[in-house]
Length: 123
Image 1 (cartoon, rainbow, N blue to C red):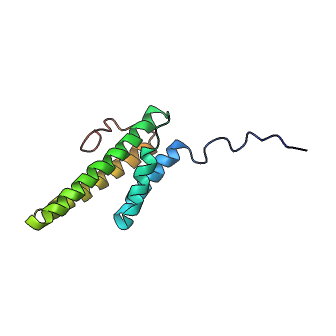
Image 2: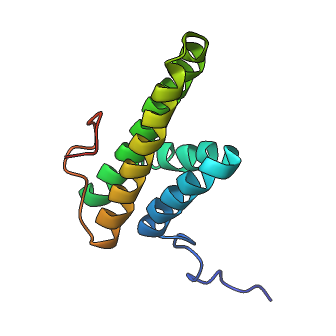
Image 3: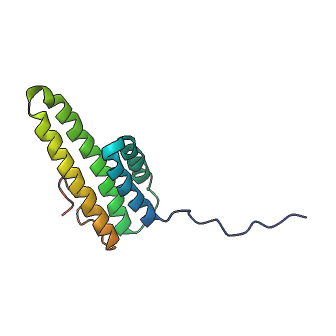
């Protein structure tokens, strides 16, 4: 006797809102571990299926935060030899922290990121 497959379990384990929240948390943990930032970026990047425009703006913002942050880190590392790299790395830390805080607060208020492609804070 065979059982019919149930329709339970067909939906996602974690909804898109939870994934967006998880990416922000992984980015925060990345200040200590480093590797969790890459994991968060992969999650955000792979969210290419249709989602609400609000959540799509968060995933775009998260992917852009990763790539722009990586650019700042590389530039800061190269410029360390000239003495100004410390300032670039300090700017990266403040910039990325502000983006992550702003993003998680907007997500908590069910708001989209106004300009997810912005180089600054999404305003």
